[in-house]
Length: 245
Image: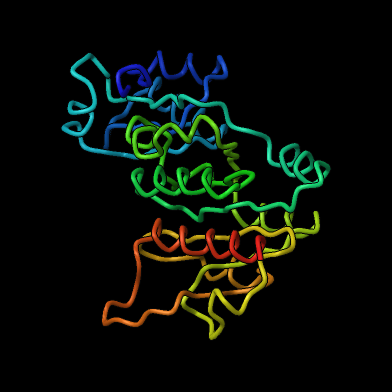
């Protein structure tokens, strides 16, 4: 799967971007210089494509071909337009349930969340263009193929998606420890979107300031946090429970 979703070489990556290929992430060699390399950097920046600067050893592990300091990961899926997806769901008469992932970085957590989201009737997942986990072979495997069934949208900033959800009549709920309310104190019965944060930092504080509600999971042991995919599952199934009762 990885070899089928890679493009290597500076010129090849430039041509792929210009051709409109759906690129999840580009790995560039640290310290590399040159006019063509600078052209690629500018092109990636203009198109808001996720870039990671890595040592040459990392690129050599990604491919044994002549990569010239640039390897791109091509997404195996087409991403959806947020406004169109939200409009279609709201007009369908369904009680909307969306999931927003604030720079979740681990592809296996991402895949596990996609799988759970598909099983719990989530209408779509929204991720940020930069800083998040890509859709790659590990994501597909961990999701058990659910990635091909779940609409996924990419946005420049998660906060923009929050504001759009709210303007569309969708309640935005943040999964965070920075609250006294538990997941059992918050209503998920109306159209809503749940935000899950990154593995190490949680939800960005600027996003927490604009959400409609915050909720946490009660932790009864000595460990102070859950794996994000496990926590996400608990939130989604509480939404299912409330909507079926």
